[in-house]
Image (cartoon, rainbow, N blue to C red; front, side, top):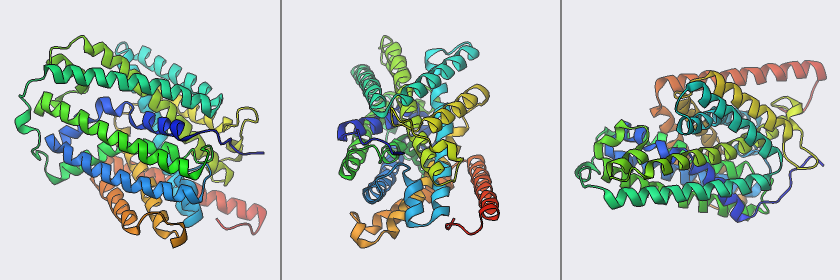
Length: 421
């Protein structure tokens, strides 16, 4: 039977979500957010958390009705129609594949800063290793994600204690000013939302959780924990570094050094590598399952719909995703890909909110007002992204839509009348 096994309980699903959200972003995202909004990044954090909550409740409501693999790709198809589902799925697969490569290069930068070729070789090795791990089954994926998450959280605790114990109050006076204005705050929210978006990984595993209730609890619990943790990290960094937060690419290690706790820097480096591995593992699992769902509906080549009979994982899709990430990790400079990935993620969640809004009353668990707020929030944050990211995202979406339209036309000519597109 070409189905995935339901093996994940609430705890495992929470771990998958946390490992995707509490990943490399917590070690790096606050610096660019501060550069956009100044210390007003706390307001941006609140906006990002609100939009993420709206998206989360939309996703859990939809997954409760459609508990199968694919996330918003499936939800959009079922509620709004195949084209909406395709837009969501294509945005997710392309954007998150770029995110996977970014995570691989991030862990390489922390582990082997020089020479560059050694870092890229390590990134490729990490992708290959995690691809093999994902092929061994989802329970093994969840187990490794749990171990990496424990290491990451331990590192954060050590870093925060070290910084707090030795911090000065030099940055406190500017900690809550809106230095970047309204646009800067919204740009910061878009960057910080990118760090939150890991709970999508849980929704894409809907076919492997024990029950729809498990999925809903896991999404809300993991998001709540992440919001609290990010708020604590943001406040500590603002108090320790003040306006200097915007000038460093490694804020936690910089704060530790500034607090006289240089011994904590290698601990932070190890934690950043663990966090990157955890995020990469969860991202690749989620992209593989969305690819599987799209292949089942013939929106991607049919051979990607294969499920390994022994381990019950999407083997062909997982290998294809791993290969694509390897190519990007070897060939691309992915610093600018973060904005492009954010574009894809926000489009994905815009479709999720629209789908949840269109559900009938009998399927609803949350008020429609939250879906409207989530949709407006996603579109608003898309509008604040850098122009190049928006243009690139629109072009890639247009290419995907054009290819699907051409494939449907050829299929129709070859097969005659068929099911609706």
